[in-house]
Every structure is written in structure tokens, then in C-alpha cells.
Length: 247
Ligand SMILES: [Zn+2]
Image 1 (spheres, rainbow, N blue to C red):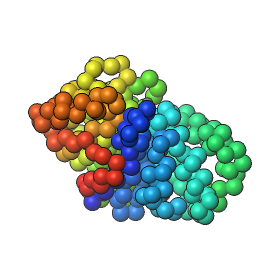
Image 2 (cartoon, protein in one colour; image 1 turned 90 degrees about the vertical axis):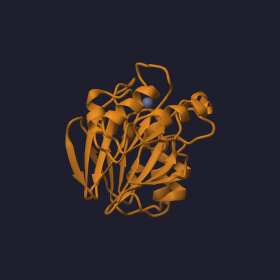
Image 3 (cartoon, rainbow, N blue to C red; image 1 turned 135 degrees about the vertical axis):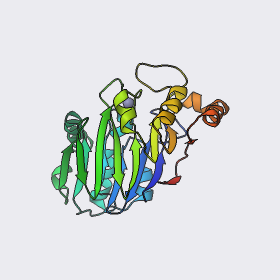
């Protein structure tokens, strides 16, 4: 059993929804998947300073990782001593270290817990905290790696941003639950169009597809999305912040 708590499901600039961020729990693992600038209050409300073992960052866009200085600052104030794993592309790990310094200049040297930075690479498999992680690139304006988490006999994935690729579609194959950006109904060089996404997920045998990161104006035209989800050959949902989804 895995449980995915939706902390946020919004795009970068939505006044109504926090950035897409998922708190994934499995036996021996609590993982925060992406942590943008509007995610921290949701993290504080949902997890104590020692609850989260691992943070995954899909790519270096602010709505996916600028929440880290606040989250780690809060955990420092609240006395965290438990080791933390931060998992991301090697180049993004460097940027994470930079924003922690920029955010609170003297703080990283005073963390009372070690941070184990672990490199995520497309096509490689990692094992940590009783779970298995795999990654695949999507097509985005910067390099983005979708993640597949296998634990307790279940599979949960998060796309990060970008149009799916053959590699990311293969990563999602047979997953119980996939959170995927579903930016609009327009074909885009850097985002996913909703109809193509629904077809891909059906073809990949996804158990449940959760549409996130929907462009704010598109999300207001909810009826069109509902119609597309109803017509799809995959079970599709559009979660709200606070939803807990079992896999
Ligand atoms: Zn992005």
C-alpha cells in the first residue's frame, strides 16, 4: 500500500492552487515529490520535522524546487536531526545547494542532520528506504526527469513537467497511479496536451491517472476536462489539494 497526499496540484502561477507537490508514503518511506515556492505551508501542515526521509526534485524550475529553503529552514528550527536524502539530476543538485545558500546564507552549515545528495539519471535504477526508483526524461524547456516509485508491491509515478516521451511512457507502464502534468489542450513543445496524455496513459496500462499542473485558465473550463476524462479509456481524476489517494 502506498498513499499519495496531494499537497498541491497547481501550475506555476495559479492564484488558487499551490504548486504541484506530492507527499508519498509507503512502509519505511515518506517522500516529498517536488517542492515549489507555494508548497511549504502545505508541507508544514502535513508532516513534522522528522517525518520526510527523501525529497525528489524533477527539474530546476522555481515552482518545483524554490520551496526547499523554507522547508529545510523550518525543519532546522523544529530541531530535525534525522538524515535527509535529496534525489535529483546532478546539475539540479548543484542548483539546490545554491538556493539553500541564497535563501538562508548561514543555515546549511548549521543543519543538525546530514543531507545525502543522490544522483538521479535517466534509465538507472536506485534503491533507497525500501523502495525502487527509476527515471525518464520528458520534453521540457529544461531537462526534466519523471520518476517511478515502486514500493510495497505498488507503483506511483510523477511526471514533473513536460510532454511525455517514449521513454517516460515506458516508465509509467502498468503503474497503479500516475500524477502527470496536463497543461492544456494545445500541442506544445514543452508541455503535455490533455487528449494525448489520456491516450498515452490508456495505452501504457496506467491504473489511475491524476491530472495536475493544469494551466489556470484551462482549469476554469472544467467541463471540457471532465468530458475528456469521461471519454478516456483510462480512469482519470483531477485531484484537489488535501486529497489522499491510495495505490
Ligand atoms: Zn517546468
